[in-house]
Image (tube, rainbow, N blue to C red; front, side, top):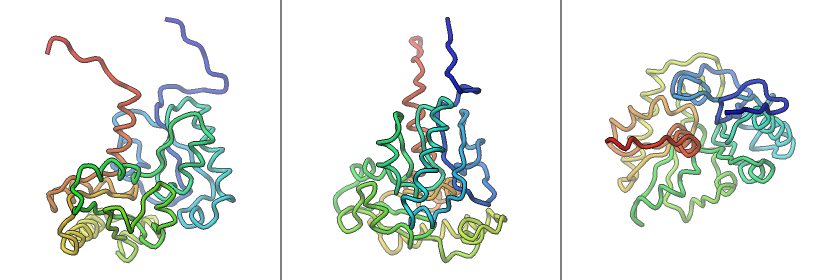
Length: 244
């Protein structure tokens, strides 16, 4: 077999590229910002100066460094691009137009598939970092309409342990306390909306707590990892063993 070098590329084998916020937080296994989350290599690229709040508030100012970081990932061989913050959905359509690889920036992109798995009178519970940022303007960027679609949202912005590490970025994470807050939020949503039939964890920092939520509410739980693994499998299919 003959291989050819890609000009400007100095490493190989990373199918997926992940755009990172310029954040200060410990990323544990399960978090999208921790490479041990995945059973395959990924490539990271930080967008300097990009925070969740200024991304949502100032589209044009931060889009161009966002695009440059994405192009760096493509230059280094990735075949598809995701991100470490669901609020990157604000750039979803724009970045898709400007790149030549598939782009899937928000775990909420799974919503359009999931709503076909439930009945018309049932709902999908979404847990997000900050429900104030996940407003209709942001939802509209990926064609979700809160008044029409079967979605109910609960934010963790008032949970002290989650807020201190994920929003205020104190640099300290107490996983046991955060897990209690996430599970409690899921249980509260189920109490408020008994017709919830599945959960979608919007924030990229929430997959470490997906199993705890699943065990507590006994419902399907989707998140960033379910989306990323799904897309990765489309690029790396393996032959079936004919002997079994």
